[in-house]
Image (cartoon, rainbow, N blue to C red):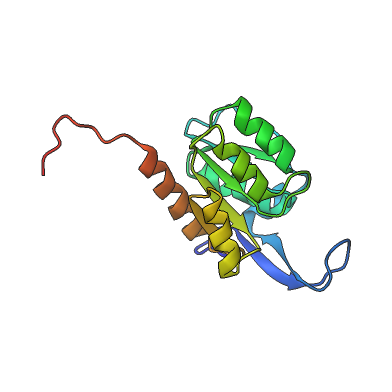
Length: 178
């Protein structure tokens, strides 16, 4: 994620070792959100007044940064780290939007999307490193409303979140004239 004018950002580094790194790019936080990194929390802060967003993301650093950016926008954010817990949260609670990683432990993001579509029309924004065209089309075909490949610009993510939330708001009929 890249931000501007003091915004939080994520920087890319190559193959830092550890399980599954295999020399591929990984995302790491930088900026003000970096101090809030750690494990992915399965919680929603009660003081958040805005629409509820479920983030299903297994990277603790990215999940924490998403939480910070979305809460700065006045949204109530719940983060879960695997597909099974994400699906359970989507069934149990009502959310205005789901941000869903494609590659998740427990149940992959495509299957989570398919199963959510069986009981809900909540907007789903897939946010994932699986970014080639065929994979994006597959994500959209199983029910995602939007798809953003990583790395991404935080401003664009916020704009897409707001666009999905706007699309769900009813248009007032009184006083509306063309």
